[in-house]
Length: 445
Image (cartoon, rainbow, N blue to C red; front, side, top):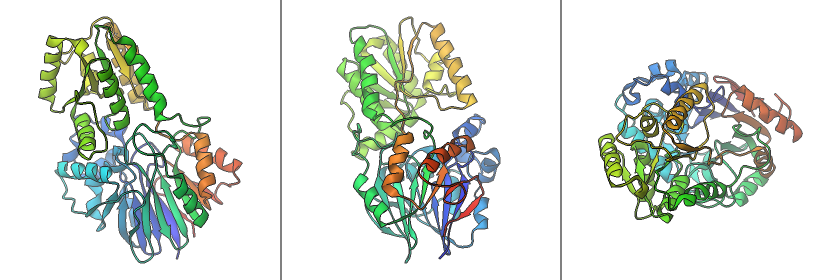
């Protein structure tokens, strides 16, 4: 049986992640994501009402016409985690394939919400939620399981696809956090076992492979946030914190610190409501009892008005907008487009790092300039990454000992950085280490 990989999306860029693996006449798809910066280029567009062909043309979703190169039948669509750059295109593309969608429970719940909001296509694929370590038979020759790992969203998994020629490991995205704030550490024993049994290919992210050492634990970010927030318990100025709505562990930390200094945490915005309420309903997190969540824009405005009246020192709004995205709550506060007003000495904490593209740089610069002009004190990059660093990748390769490696999740500038590490470990370009671009195929066995 021959096995080959097709790079559909995410190999020339950040986002639009989608990879297909053909094993004989059976095809498995990993992820179906969107490219967020391309989406932001069209602020007037309603994603749920836009046709997939238009979105492909705009560079927002993967160009899955590349799938026409493969002879065979798609047997499963496997989602690694709940970030939009990995599952956001499911409502636009999944209906083309008569195959179930597999994910961890939280990921499947997020996909379900995405599908329910879709207005252009009917997506009737069966949704199957699998716990870590639960083996699922895709066909007579293929099976898979999700292996526990850590990332900046809960219920993230590394996918192990078992084929007659060995396992194919799909590791987009991960970090080796041995002391996480939420959940358990990665399942090192399982990775070692899979490595001993034989790994044909490792398809891995390249995001931070150029950063030396190990990626710091989420506990470090918790300490950074706590150090700043608890330094101002007697201060009467406002404290506003912005982070990724999907980073449940970080939101939990911020809410707990707010509670600790006697302020009520307010989770504001639709994405905060979607990710955090879903996680709490599924009993994957417990926020302090003083926490309130408001998603609807009109209700958010009303809440901000009430907050001003009762006293900014009694609350900590936790909002999105750390990239300066148009329409986000923090951006609108900076532009004086809400009832909330920044006053001299108010603290604005950014518990996230800049997603590096020119649009985000410009938007964040503008937002920071507006906030500083109103007297805000800025605390930036109270954050640790959710992506493995160089020495984490080194350890991961040692655990798995793959026959082949394919680097993904980034442009050629980053995927080629992986080549330096792979060379140190005895791999050779185009022999057992492959750099791929969107639309390219690579035969493995």
